[in-house]
Image (cartoon, rainbow, N blue to C red; front, side, top):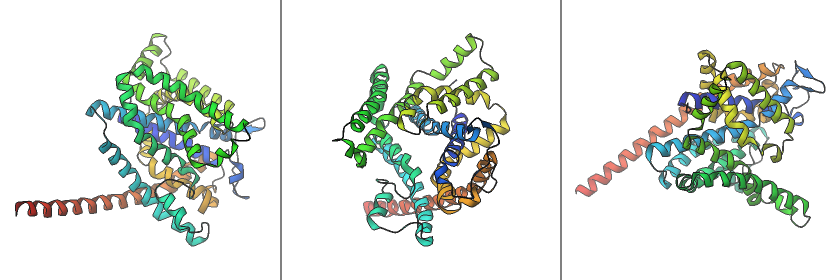
Length: 366
C-alpha cells in the first residue's frame, strides 16, 4: 500500500487542519481581548483545543514527509532529478508565493499594520528573511530542501542504509548544536544570526523529509500494512487508538521548541498510515482532498486573517471546531481567486514563449 495521489492530497488537507488548530488555539498571547475561543471539553487546567493545537505542530512533519515522498516517486518514474527539475518546482512555488505577497502585504501598508521598507521588501520577495508573516518560515526551509534534493537523491539511490545513519546524525546534531550555543555565553549571539537559525532549522527538519524518500524506496507502507494484518490489528478501532496516543504523546512532550519536534520523523509515518485507514468514508475523504488541493494557498494566507487583519471575524463562532470550519470557508474564495490569477499568469507566459520561439524560428529559417 503506497500512498496514492488521493491519499497524499487528503493528508495535506488533514495537515492543513492541524496547522489551523496549531495557530488558532495554543498561542493565547496572539488572541486579542474579546476574540477568545470557548473550549467545550476540559481536562483539568487544559482543554481539548489546546491539546490538539499543541500536537498540531505535526503538520510541518506531515508536509515535509509528503514532500520527500512525492519527490522520490517523481525520481522513480523519471529516473532522475536534475537542476532543471529544481528550477521548475521553485518557479511554480515562487509564482504562487509572489501572487499572495503582492495581494496581502500591501493591505498591511494601507491600513497601517506594516511599514514599507525597500530592503525588507526585497528580502521577503526572495524569501530570504520572511518578516511579513511568521508562518511563512516553512517556505524558506522547503526551498532549501528542494535545492538539496539532488544530493539526497544520489545518497539514497547509491546507499539507502547510509540515509538512515544521516537521519540519526542530523536528529542529534540539531540538539547538540542548540545545547552548546545556548549554554555558552560567548556563542549565544548566534541565535540572532539568520544563517545559524536557518542551519539549525534544516538540521531538525531534514530527517523527516529524508524519511519520506526512504518510505518510497523500501515500500514501507505496504510492509506496515502487512504487519498490522499479520498481528490482527488491521481495524479502525486500533487505528483510532493509535491516532489518539500519538496526539496525546506529542502534546505531552510539546514545549513549542525544537526539542518537542525531535521525534516527529518517527511519529509522522505512523500517523499518516493510521489516518488514511481511519478516513475511509468517501464524503469525509473528499472534504480533506478538497482542502489538500487548496492547502498551499490556505497555508500562505490563513494567518493574515487570524492574526493580522480580521481576527475578530475569524474567532466569531467562538467554539473551536466552528472556528476552524469558518476559517476554511473564508479561505475558499481567496484560494480560488489566487488560482485564477496564477492561471492567467501561466496563459500569458505560454503566449509570450510561443511568440518568442516563433520569432526565433523565423530568424533561423531566414
